Amino acid sequence: MNAAELVEVVLPGKVEPEGLRIRHGAVPAAGPGQVVIRMEATGVSFAEQQMRRGRYYDQPPFPFVPGYDVVGTVLATGDGVDPGLAGTRVAALVKVGGWASHVVVEAADVVEVPEGISAAQAETMVVNGVTAWQMLHRKARVRAGRTILVHGANGGVGSVLADLALAAGVKVIGTASARHHDTLRRRGVVPVDYRADVAARVRELAPGGVDAVFDHVGGRGIVASWRLLAPGGTLVSYGSASTRDDDGSKQWPVLKLLARVWLWNALPNRRRAYFFNVWAGRALARNAFRARLRADLTQVFAALRRGDVTARIAAELPLARVADAMRLAESGTVAGKIVLTP
Ligand SMILES: NC(=O)c1ccc[n+]([C@@H]2O[C@H](COP(=O)([O-])OP(=O)(O)OC[C@H]3O[C@@H](n4cnc5c(N)ncnc54)[C@H](OP(=O)(O)O)[C@@H]3O)[C@@H](O)[C@H]2O)c1
Image (cartoon, rainbow, N blue to C red; front, side, top):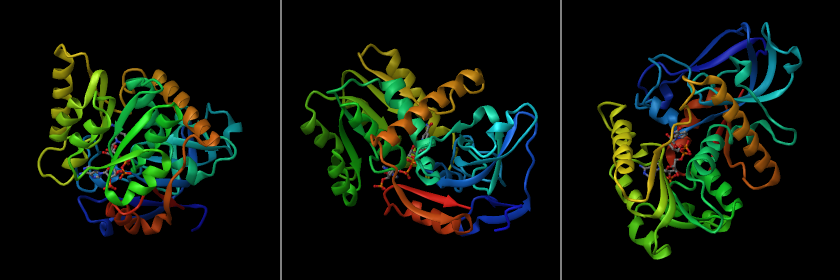
């Protein structure tokens, strides 16, 4: 790749992975308050699996450049930005636009990546790490010695969440396909097959209920998640993976979850429910949002350096092989993040 050329992946519409296009152009310039990041690593998240089906609840209109997060070095700084930032390795949560050799972001939105962490390792922690940290430590606030249920404990968010919880002395029951169970056991997670009777198995393991459930599956299963809570427990719903392949409104599954959460909180039942959205608060209080994200991602990077969480890189593929990367991510056969490189 020519270092002075922009290479980006375009999602032109609802397409199979092979329908993603590579576009070449000029490297963008940094406007006032912005930086240009030369991408070193970006990743495939579940969000892109939904976006290529037109199923992510607030995706932009087609065509657009997907890519939820990015890690790279600052190549150029715009007016009003400390020029000393150039050359620094940073991470940014962008929702879209990350699948590109160069990404323009507001300087206030980048978070420095500490020494000792590679770009690919850092990449596995951006959206996954912030989501996991905030759900565990800002929403559920589970104390040591308590027990939680993490759905999809082998997935990107689920595996970081399980690591962070174990490091905080919390016991973790995790659902996953049977092929991931040995890996989960080695990490200290008690695995449950999500294709079996999850509720019955969790009740055997935690007869009094669990102190928190983290549910990205949504659909009807959310009721089972709620019923597994012990008194004082917290349900954190944060996705609707079960409706990825449905037709119809992309907002409706999330609205239904929001309605349920509202209802459960309105009824007297000594349990709490949240619908977690990593973007919540951004529109209303941008600086508070940035401060929280910076603080939490910095904590996650520190946990990574301590070895409390593991960066699980399932594969590293160049941007040009994005179709293979998506196929691999959607195969359900890999554990960890598919990282895209320039
Ligand atoms: N609300 C937010 O702010 C926010 C932020 C980030 C992510 N998310 C959500 O978090 C979820 C996980 O994202 P990710 O990037 O970590 O995904 P990922 O790495 O692809 O992991 C997905 C996990 O879900 C399991 N899974 C897939 N389809 C399922 C289904 N129909 N029923 C039950 N389990 C299923 C997979 O298990 P197997 O591999 O065993 O099949 C895997 O463990 C997504 O739903 C995403 O939208 C939400």
